[in-house]
Image (tube, rainbow, N blue to C red; front, top):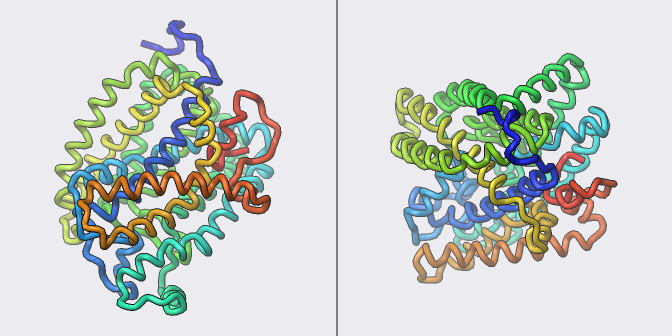
Length: 421
């Protein structure tokens, strides 16, 4: 049934934006949860030398002796869809900002909004976050020795800060294309209109494009290879898929958040997408057992893993959007406060998580008890830290809300994360 021709529910832009606003806060909480349990996953490798390849502490900074297989499943599920969903949502408001500011001004504002947090993140936050990794692998850790070891490394750890520079790169590419090639704007608007009127066919096209983006890289590089140049890194198999989902978000945003895929009528199908997400994830999980953390896996198994991952990622992302539109269109004081501080929480949480995990290494509790002992305090401390940072004028410009006039429909949304402004 065509959503555009179904007048069952009058679209409400403010409620759609509220739903996406809430989704951003939930995604940040999930990122904290993943990092909180990662050190308790069964597939986490044994601690190896801090100074020797493959530098596994970049992914697993603190590794506890206590493990729980359930955390492996949770991390695997988050790994295949969480960041694609983050890039998808990050693209939603790009078009409005481009229309309001123009390509050049948009690019300048995004560079100022995302550049300083990335630079300070890799220069200040990450050295603090990585010290527990060094301390766990060193008999007598000393601060000056740590700094010397860190400086001598051939890699520059950026942790979750990689998302900021990749998001900025995507923003600049979109702005550059629209500025340099005017026909791109016309094509994008036509595609946006198609997405609003034919959401199912649009989704089918996105699925095909995501398969074309992921299959070659996933087959060649597998699930665990990263590109690293100075402080700039990204996961090799996912980078093209991230671009597809970000571009999809731009198109959906241009079509109108209350229309097409995010129309309440379409969102009612979330149960079907949930079933598909569970089944497809289970299928991918079975295949990935042959490839995950297995550098000697055959090309055939790598291809099978890639083929299974694409629909599993797609179904989980669409389900996440639909359930948000269906149930997430509420506004409370607590949610508004979370939205306002979400970016600051993302920025500081990694250091807090690693220090809490390190503090619990000697505690003889099972992993299923330690994980919430990390996640809950990390969430609260990250939240409190974000609030405190926003009270320092120079830091508020980095982790706070952009200061600009805005309509009441987007007032709280602008402060949720480093949105286009």
